[in-house]
Length: 63
Image (cartoon, rainbow, N blue to C red; front, side, top):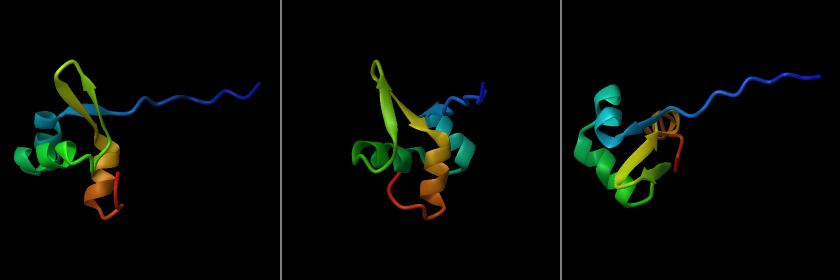
């Protein structure tokens, strides 16, 4: 039996994403509103996939 480990995505709020990446909060918020980065809503809070956001910043195209 092949056991694979599952690593859940690192989801962060817009504020946490901005703090961890050094990007202005308004920029992250704009990308979320424009649908340019991977995110989900938990209630009224947007949660950003941190790893995909970093890929986006490094020129990985649309996240």
